Length: 412
Ligand code: AMP
Image (tube, rainbow, N blue to C red; front, top):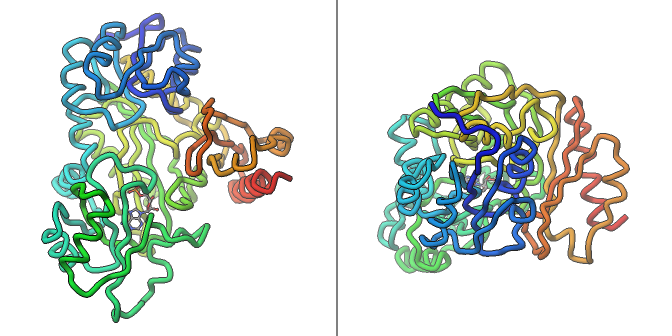
């Protein structure tokens, strides 16, 4: 196996914060970074050696990047798999086109998980109104309708409530974001009497894009397994992350998630079987719902470094970003061992609504580390940065994280 040693050039498709943090670490190790993104001011370009301006689905721009790179990787899974397959003729693409083909379409991803026999929420395709009516008859309500492609952070999702007259049951907890008390799905649509008309209205909210529908899961908590898989198939697994979402966006991650060993091993085994079956190379996140009876359901696979793995950058011997570089360059994987308990809290653009936040409190906290991604256009829901709190008492760190966010929000 050829190793790409420091001095080699890594090409990154997409210039967001994941690419940026990887670039910082890769350059620290002596690698060169070139990035393709529509914006020359994107977070990754600010810390890169070279830059290609272009859309992620622009074949000429992508080929131009590939010709400058010894290996190509991704900041986002929303790069057309056919284009990646074409680039594979120019330089190795890790993860490869076939991984992306399976993951970037929710329907294909769910079929893949079913074939592996891995547990997931009941689901069905919803390509048109008639199919959605049939899907809801099978799955029941409440449910969530999700676009097959290009959805993230709750974008491209519609919550489908119970039909009028149905009992409310234990609905108080279904799909409700427990931290904020907000509905977990992006929008609720009141049911109407004609099922076909209702289905058409629901799909219209997704601009008629093909979708899948899932049962709304009553989970106890959400966790994710971040792992790396090398070119040789070796794995390294990070401490399991426990995630709280607010308005569909990750709010906090704590790690290690308090969890019995047997449950941890079950979660890890699921993630490893996904990475092996798909032939992944690089870091991967497998998000899961944990139910009250301990069952784990796979929610989503991300074939890249992940927001819920940001805690590793500061809290673990090898961060997910260094690990990704190691994996795609064919180096031995690093030690994922935690050096400390950790809580990561996201800094969302809403905090900028009255101007740039004052970082006084964050910077004064002895165990807090501030990360900002260099985005110059804060917008509601946009991830602008995060704060990492290093504390073996992760309960205390969670409380500190919320206090810091409250202080930022109230500008105190
Ligand atoms: P996703 O983009 O599919 O990861 O969804 C974002 C968030 O929405 C998840 O992390 C959950 O908090 C919530 N969510 C997604 N799908 C479901 C589901 N089937 N049941 C309950 N909550 C869900």
